[in-house]
Image (cartoon, rainbow over all chains, first blue to last red; front, top):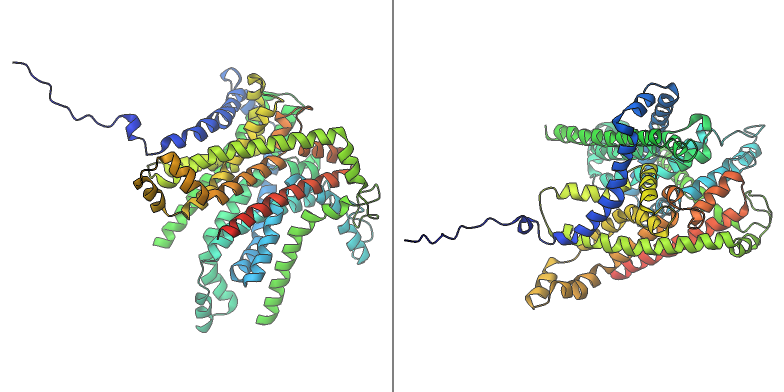
Amino acid sequence: MTLSSPAIPRGPTLVERLPRGSVLLVPALLFLLLFYVYPLAQLIGASLPGGSGKNYALIFSRPVFLRVIAETFRVSLVVMAVTVLVAFPYAYAMANAGRRALLFLTIALLIPFWVSLLLRSFSWIVLLQNTGLVNQVLLGLGLIETPLKLIRTEIGVILGMVHVLLPYAVLPLYSVMKKIDMRLMEASSICGASWFHGFRRVYLPMALPGVLAAAILTFTLALGFYITPALLGSPRDMMIAQMIAGQFSEQLNFGLGAALAVVLMGLTALAFALFGLGRVLLARRAAA
Amino acid sequence: MMTDRLRKTLFWAFVCATALFLLVPTLIIVPMSFSAGSRLVFPPEGVSLRWYGKVLSDPDWRAALGNSLLVGSATAVLASALGTAAAMMLNTASFRGKALVLGFLLSPMVTPVIVFGVGSYLVFARWGLAGTHAGLIAAHTVLAIPFVLVSVLASLRMVNPNLALASAGLGASRLFTFRRVTLPLILPGVISGAVFAFITSWDEVVVAMFVANTGTRTVPIMIWNQVRTSLDPATAAVGAILIAVSAIGVVLSYTLKESDR
């Protein structure tokens, strides 16, 4: 008696189990693995020469590096606060404007978005230099007697960075605000609440997810800024990106530069993780 | 107590000041580039085209313009091909980890560009891509893929999926359906993705600084080197050329999108 082997229903093979059309995703994924993930991984390797963590030990013990990290955090926090504060009314205006005002505000927001950051920093140098437009106007109005030193200072860096980051803060705020039903504000005012009270207790809580998104996006992008602080700031208040560039192009200490780059990557990832956490907490509170 | 009217006036004054803050430093380069004087000041000293003449006759600037155009166009083609294919798949498929894949494909947008720049520098030196156009194109394509993806995905969401089904039902192959049905419908999205990819490369300086050499340097690198040494109206003229090219691209892609409606 021969046993004819019963046809065992075979499960789908690995390839068959892949979602339909996966082959379309392969080129982009392979490309990014090769030219994006691999270079970043190599950076981690280069930061640990012979498996030793001496570069990291150096970064976290020498005051010169700790100061740069602290400075990067401080500037990023200030820039984040100023950007969100300026972006909030702008986004509010966009969310509640008529067609033509909305068009104007959108164009004013998107033109800088598509002009290179390098050129805008260059313009800021021209505007802020001792003989620049800003000093000319202030002198002309009699507000100051000698030109203010605005470039190679922190004011210059903050102005330049806020200018670059403003669209990144306005867009998430706007997308949340345009969904807010303004009749709720009317209702609060009919119920006798002052405008400020209504704003604080009704509008602001609804806009909070947008504020959070804007804050975290501006903060994380600010951490990695290189061009603007290099052109508008003083070398004394260096940010971490400038130090990374210096290690690679001037000091030629690739291991240390790579370690600094990994630290910056880690800080950026950490900030995004906090953002995820904040969103979860907000959603929980809304559900409760 | 502030009246409603006063509050509204103050509010709109602040918003208009913000709009000026956005626009003035962005566009002031254009009038300054037409200066006849040799100092970079505003208002410019007289009107002339001398700085444009100087830039366009300088072999270094011309070589840089050529490099920028070459790298930008190649980046636009490569990033649109890779990004459009990925968007086609992500639009129709639903699978576990899709959000993760999308997040990964978009992550070059938020990775600090200095980190990516020095990473590419390390790897390209070993691969023999340092200082080559190919290396620069590959690195810029990484930065440009997210823009194509966002733009094409937005277009695909507007396409009725039944059209592709109808085409398949009538016996068309998937390639034929893509070429004759889907692609014409999403073309404005693909083109605006390609334009954004071009501009990403056209304006990019940090990665280029670490990847290019004197033979392959692009316009932004020349500007970067100039700005650090002196303020020269020639730099403003180059900047105005950069802005003009970007503006043509953006207007082109918006016109296409509008005419599509």
